[in-house]
Image (cartoon, rainbow, N blue to C red; front, side, top):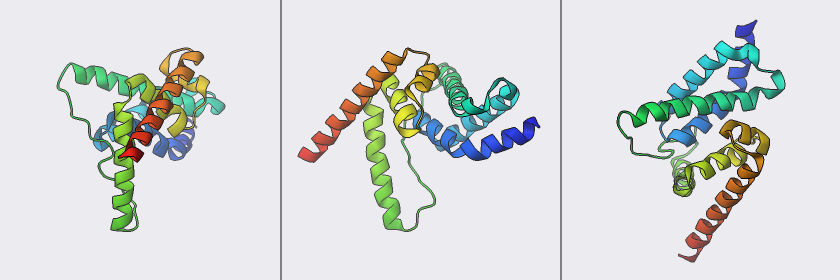
Length: 166
């Protein structure tokens, strides 16, 4: 039974978890590795999770896998960030170019944000989690998440205004 439930969870959330991890680590291969680690850990502790809390729980597992990776990476070598270098499943080369430019711009703006603001924005605005779920994942208070998200949105708006003035 545990395997069937995990299969359903995997099919439903694999793309969301991958995008979230890719947004955190900026690397396709690392995101795939972390995604596999996330679902491995989910398999081990699946019985501890209620059905209505699967998505935030899974994102918490993914975040912990990412933090473990960063800790291990900090003890070895640093990696240069490259945000959303290649996107797949696009229809034409023109569409791919336009989409790549948009993601590069989003990546540039997100990369400029402090880590905790970027994390709040990724969880809430990009992945649709609630403020409380994001606070639980980040292990901070609800009001702190709201402040981080407000500041991140202000910074993104400020970047947009600067680009318009150019």
